[in-house]
Image (cartoon, rainbow over all chains, first blue to last red; front, side, top):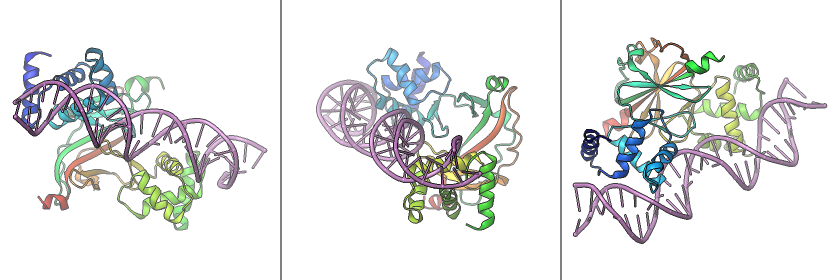
Length: 142
Length: 142
DNA sequence: CTAGGTGCAAAAGGTTTGCGGTTAA
DNA sequence: TTAACCGCAAACCTTTTGCACCTAG
């Protein structure tokens, strides 16, 4: 990880009242290296390759810390394990019914989605849009 | 359950190649009675009140059958148990960060959301929008 | 009749927790 | 110095599975 990223992470954690640790840096690093929306267990396996002593509990702790300081998003897939996404640009997810792959879809494809005016009283903090169907590769094999 | 609903359920199941059973009718009945997005376990508890012999495995089987024949939707909440919703009108869900409650939000509040034009190759089948923040009751207590 | 569904209990995930030791600030 | 964090292992919760029996069509 380059210096600027380390400093950025440090500041973000501090802002949320969380400490900088080697494990958190490493877990974030793992997420940034592969944008394939891994599960906690997949992050664990990859992290162990260079940090053999890290534990699954720590991976969950680190992922939670990264989510809390807004560097990572959680992605929910039907009944499956939670996946993690380090892309914080405004986007949504497309989950393929065939292969289970998760793809980032830029928000430019969602015209007008910002015009959400909820019923009186609701205070909106975040929105999560997930799309389902066939990804290009699986669609072409049908 | 009234006759028309039973017949509707029967037809829907048949169309999907699934059988009509007393348990499926009963689970659907339980879902229709309370629109509070129960988990499988909550459905199980309610179903047992009038069908003491039903098992949790059967509840999952019935819920899956109802989802397959498009009478029920699954609602994913971060890392929590999957919830089930028998409202098939176009709507999305608002999940309260404070109390965890799930609320149906009519699609009229989501202007323009139908204009989704995905990148080449993606075949869209369904979309799921989930909103987060504070529900009216919890927001007023802050 | 028989493929599909049910109930039960055990197993398989996925996530959280408790605890003694370690470390960032 | 000390509250926060770590690694480990056990616990917990949700969902799935295998099997013998049952039933809708």
